[in-house]
Image 1 (cartoon, rainbow, N blue to C red):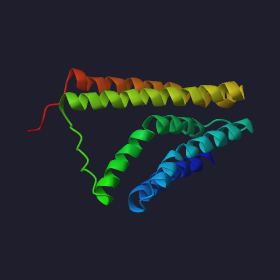
Image 2 (image 1 turned 60 degrees about the horizontal axis):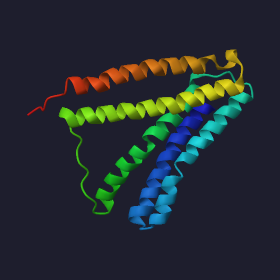
Image 3 (image 1 turned 180 degrees about the vertical axis):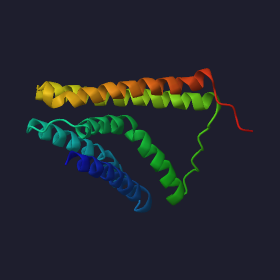
Image 4 (image 1 turned 120 degrees about the horizontal axis):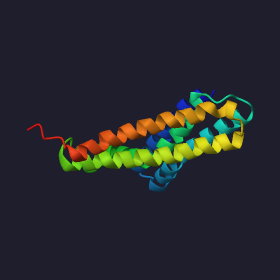
Length: 178
């Protein structure tokens, strides 16, 4: 059930984003658009509540439960950036907005973007990790929540690998293809 709820929440997130952008740029209702965009965290709250209720009702934690916490962390850390990205493209396509700049794929600017992405990853890890630990403490049954802590350990390894890759562009910047 939680797995399908994660999929539904991702779809819900993008429905709120698209509806907000349509209201803002096509219907010319900026307040409604802003309201719909502000509603995107609702899907995170629904997912968190459902996950905790499922575990509190005796479900043994699975990787899917852990992914719910990861999803929330990633949504909080990267959600605003994703909405901003979509907003620029929507404004360009439907409201005569400025053409979005293409991301540089080399040099110091690219290295800076990679570091910023890693900082957001750390924020997602902190939020998701805090949720995982809070759930473990709330459920208070190590055998029921063991997979949540293992998932956090795996995510920590992934975060370290991402750090190495992201900061490698600072030490060894990509060169321009031209």
